[in-house]
Amino acid sequence: DEIEKIDVTIDGADEFDANFQLIKGGGGALLREKILAWNTKFNIIIADSSKDVEKLGAFKLPLEVIPFATKQIITFLEEEGLKPVQRMKGNEPYRTDENNNIVDVDIFDVDDLKALEIKLLKVPGIVETGLFLDTTSLIIVGKEDGPEIKKR
Image (cartoon, rainbow, N blue to C red):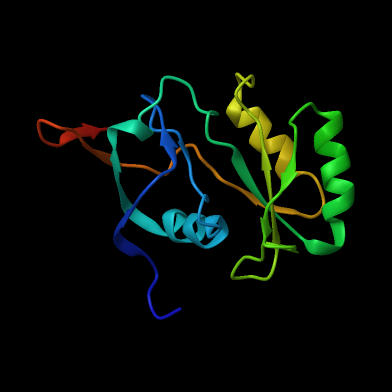
């Protein structure tokens, strides 16, 4: 709240593609990460080469959802063919820093990620998705023979 914009953010990703589209949120902080990314002038992602994929979706897409609506959201996601799985921590639902649930979905067969994100964010109770489609400025990929730098 003390600043208007963040100059630089450095973070990781669960997956990224050649178009600088990312899946983030494997650690459950996707909402806060997206807020930071949106409020940053220059976003740098650092990841190893195993995260560099031709097509997003081998890593399940996390959705942050309101606990009150989780059951109905899961039903909707099943009807959409996204094979939702509520993330658990032991025998209890996993809770984010904002005390929401995470539902992981399968997007590997989805071609239009922007349309999917718009559709998902229209569902009451889905707070945010782990799709970071246009926030990344630079990706540093760790490789055996040294880092590769990808600039947008």
